[in-house]
Image 1 (tube, rainbow, N blue to C red):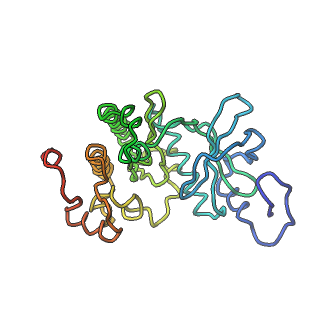
Image 2: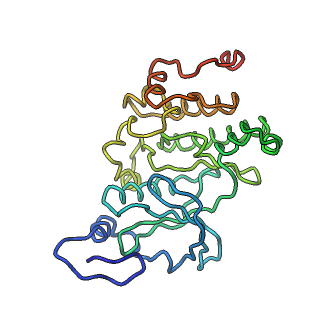
Image 3: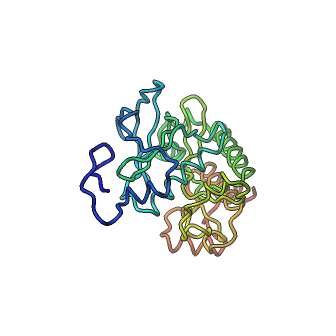
Length: 285
């Protein structure tokens, strides 16, 4: 059965299963629920590699939420990865990890999930404003305050590691600094589950694409250790290396791999010579 969109009537039945039917068969546990039936959708908040995030009003509970919807066609691999992201994030209960409230699939095969609506700036935005000479950003986000936020990120990742989850894409744009001191770690879409020790965890672990099964297919150049670039063993040290790169950027005011093309950046990481002209005090640390 094919459908025109997530809220419209069914189209004519054909002899070939549609993407929507395949998605429904693979996830019979997910409610077939048009997103607009419960949520009043408003403006777009952002867009990532897999999904679009919009602000919404939950009509049942009366709270504002963020809705993440699959951006592309509901192909099997994309649906599996999207559902997996929601489930990984949803089973981590930590103040610095946005909670997931709802996960459902529309009649067109596109999944969506609702999570906490965040207010604030990403760490990347804050650092960019400071580097651009924004006096207000420098006054508001002092080095001490940023280091306190960095500690919160470390604690969130320590919690995830203790629960067998490796983030694999830690970087400033995946950290949100809230208006009242809150800190959030976002984008668990390429996370690796190191310990599948129960049925629920094994269900969450399903759907990791082959290209992401090792370290090489995930992450962002500049925040990846040599072992991750080489597709080596995946463990918590990947996130620890990325945290070091974030800390360098926070202290030095510029990325570890500034002005480097992707190929050059990878070569420098593999050679253990990521940064040029590192400040002496920072190099000593």
